[in-house]
Length: 404
Image (cartoon, rainbow, N blue to C red; front, side, top):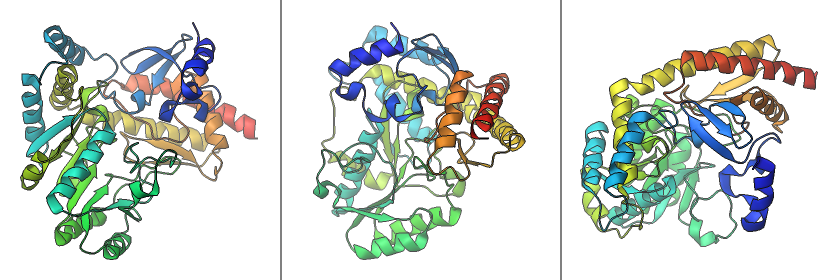
């Protein structure tokens, strides 16, 4: 069994052989489609190639693959039961932990995917306000439901009719968007920093964060932070907490349970009554194993100061890549928080340089991505990053030779 064989078999029984953001046909030619296992900060594909992993399964793995404390908690709960006639006690324990950890949270609701959480948060906002319109940043990714999917295939214009777009980090644009639907704004939904694919990331300007909070208050609308991608990697308390900005609702998923499927919405007490009115559910939303894994993940990040560790190794990676790029004659942009990094090449509009470099990184045992942000994990040690930098240095050399 190898990657090529599995692709041929999949093409007969899976539409396109693969779909969505994990479709390797979208990446550089050398990217594997199928993987065999993960351990710590490493993954192995079905052809046996080993990679130091800077995608962390596109974000969910925050402590490292198969983290012992998380796996023990999940196994302990699995021995008792997972999908039962109702939730286990672990649901209450996890909700209590989130409320204790996140200053903006007075309650929590659970689901399975980030899309579930962002959609659920907007439902709460609409139930609370009786309004329809949602302000969101142009190009922002909030999931794959019809209202937010990047592809219009299979959707209707009506499913996006209540979205009004603004430019990220522009208070003037946000105010103008609100003015076009004055009196009917249910929510402002915003990512904690701009992390659109194919574009350099952009950290939030504190004045914009505070202005968005003030505008939501003035409009009587809910401020919703989509912390699905950045949550539990930037700040355990919520990604805008360092700016003193607390949302009314926050959507969480990805890193929440170190690879186990779970999502959550946390909210302020003022929206508790509206949340109670929702009929928003799923047969697998209350599975206890993922909740046990989430509790263990958050506690481990808290007890080990895991985010601070990711900041250290992320800074080490960024500094090393900058020095290598300069030495090989490349001008690169490294954007976003060091725990959610990305590297782009200046003037590389068609991504040909990034594609070649990332493909070369793969050949030297380093898994990065040419057009999507990467992710650090607490399993990355300084030694792992140093080893990865050996591979990226060779990739820079090969890319320079190719484009010379």
